[in-house]
Amino acid sequence: MFGLALTDIWFLLIALLWTGYFVLEGFDFGVGALLGVLGRDETDRRRVVNTIGPLWDGNEVWLLVAGGATFAAFPEWYASLFSGFYLALLVVLVALIGRGVAFEYRGKVDDDRWRRRWDAVIIGCSAVPALLWGVAFANIVAGVPLDADHEYTGTFFTLLNPYALLGGLTTLLVFLMHGAVFVSLKTDGDLRVRAHRLALRLGVVAVPVAAAFLVWTQLAHGKGWTLISVALAAGALVGAVLLVGRGREGWAFTLTAATIVATTVTLFGSLYPNVLPSSTDPAGTLTTTNAASTPYTLQIMTWVALAVTPVVLAYQAWSYWVFRRRLTRDDIPAPTGLPPRNTRAGARPEIPGTAQEQRAGDEVAEERPEVRR
Image (cartoon, rainbow, N blue to C red):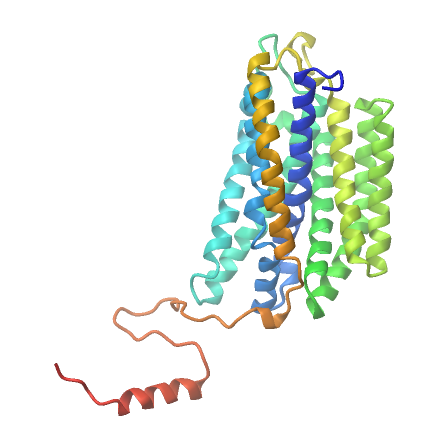
C-alpha cells in the first residue's frame, strides 16, 4: 500500500489511534479535572459532568483499540513497554477505573458529602492520567534502559526525568485548556463565562510550557520534517488562546484539538522507525522491524481493521451529533427517587419536593379509606 510495508502501516495506524485517544479523551480528562473549579453548585457540577456523560466511555475505546493493536502488531514493543512502565500504567489503570466508578456512583445517593467524595475521585482520577500519559510518551521518544534481550533495566524513578516531567506537564495543561474550552462550548450562562475565563488563563500558562517541550523534542530527537509539526502545534495553541479571548469557542476547540494532533505527530515522527529506543544498549532498541508480528498476522489485522474501523467511526460521529447542543440549567432535573444518606432502618425516606407538596401527599394518604380484603 503506497510502497509502505505492513509494519510501517501499522505503526501509522497505532499513531492514529493514540492521536484520536488524546484528542477525545483529552477534553474529558480536562473537564473532569476542572469539576471542582467550574462547578459552584450541584446543578453546575451536574452540568459539567453531563457535558461528557454520553461521551467519555466511548472515548476510552480508542485506548483499548490502541493497546490491542500494539499487542497484536508489535508484541515485543507491548511486552517491553508494559513491563518497564508497569507501575506507571497500573496507576493510570486504577485512575481510569476509579473515574468510571465515580461517574456512575456520584448521583446514586442524595447526600452532599457522598457527592463531594466522588467529585474528588473524578478530579484526581482525571488529572493523574493526563499527567502520566505525557510522562510515558516522552520516555518512549527519549528512550529507556533496555538490555540486548529488550528487558527494561531501570526503575520507576528512571521515568521521572526532567524531559518526561515536562512532557507530563504539557499534556496536563493542554488537556485542561482543551476541557475548559469544551465546557464553554457546551454550556451557557455563568458556567460558560467561568469556563471561558479559565481556558484563557490556562492557555497563557500552557503556551510557554508546550513550546519548551516541543523545542526540546525537536532539538534532541526530532527530524527535519517534524519541525513542521512543531510549528503547527505551537501556532495552533497560540491561535486557540487568541480565539478564546474573542469568545470563539468552536474554533478555539478545533485549534486545541489541532495542537494535540500536531504534538502527537511530532512524538511519533521523532520516534520512527524505532518503537522503543534503548538509552543504554543500542542492541536493545526495538524497531518496527524487530518488534513486529509475522506478515500473515499483520495481513489478517489489516483486513479486519478495514472492515470494522468505518463502522466504529460512524457510530462515534453519530453519538457526538446527537449530543451536540448546549446544556442549560433547565436541562438538569431535580433529583428524584434517590435514597437519602444515613436513613434509619424502617424510617420513611424523604420525598424530594417542596414542603407543601409533601404535606399535601400526607393529607391525601390520611383521607384515603383503608381497604380490607
